Image (cartoon, rainbow, N blue to C red; front, side, top):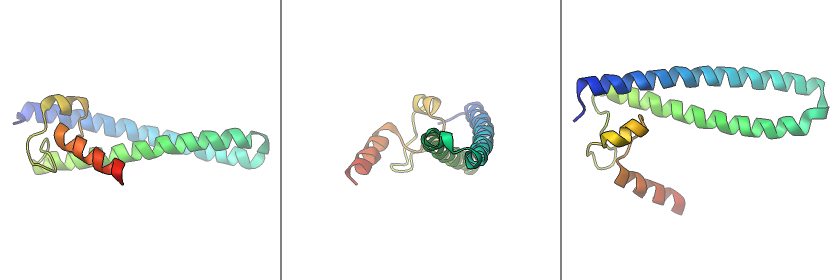
Length: 120
């Protein structure tokens, strides 16, 4: 069972990460928009920009996905379901939550879901 203090600690970490990702997304998006505007004026760097934007958009996607996970975790804190595995409904170990604050599954269930994803 998570103590109130530990829960607040996780909430703080999640909120800090949320702010950081929000800032990253805004900066990357405005950078990309700037690059696209320049790209229209200068086709010489087109190949470089294309590969650069692929990497940037992959990073953006990953960050947006993490942001969604953080929002979900913050909702769970509010609903008092944080730290409970979505599959088996057992508590997620504190060590796992320390490593991944927005973990949705305990280690065992996470391995099951990852195996299922690889088979699809």
